[in-house]
Image (tube, rainbow, N blue to C red):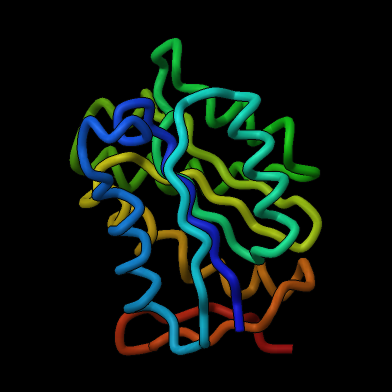
Length: 172
């Protein structure tokens, strides 16, 4: 069993101004990708750096994988990357590099994104964009490396549905 955190960072969605679609898109993707038993810790909070840090730290106590959405742009309230850097012990910039490269195929504004990934203890945290279509494009690109990363940090073993996404684990 793997516990997956889904953290939506949005001032408006946290106030109920609109329904969150991004977090639900993450859960749909995980349900398609994974054969392993899983449960979700799904939360929607405002773009507040100290709150983001506190929730990430709390989620890391039980979740092996945390997928965030929102707060990665250049606007003053976009503070997800700063919160990530304060929470993580190791940053994994290759995730953000690949996600931006994929997103640039669709939108020139992808260069404004500050998506990243990092590790805290036995938890992998990945920042995703805010739009459901972009979330899926980015997850399709980076997820093949996620199971092996989880193996390396001592998180639970996960099995993917190879008809949907094939995990890459180097042969010994």
